[in-house]
Length: 133
Image (cartoon, rainbow, N blue to C red; front, side, top):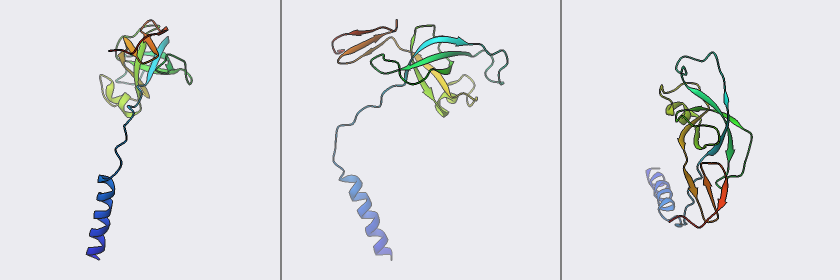
């Protein structure tokens, strides 16, 4: 039995070690454009003083995708700003008081997203450009 178990473990580790080395794609950032504010007169303890903004998710090319979301703002972003968002547990951890009940949080104001075909400026307009160096 021990020999069978050790051969299974060996086979499993061998398979892991001999996987082909393919180039990996870096996961895309969760980007959005601030399109408005949300007013909440009563908030849960821990969210006092936190602003909520309406954010339109965008692709890395600046094209709108999905439906707008509400995000807690940790960066003092303003209307038209391109922002980097996080969601789920990471959003709650990003807040000044961790583990508050939020689904999305703005964690950065994006100055420039550069790619081979498109650059998104913080003004929110997409423009054609060369690859960033």
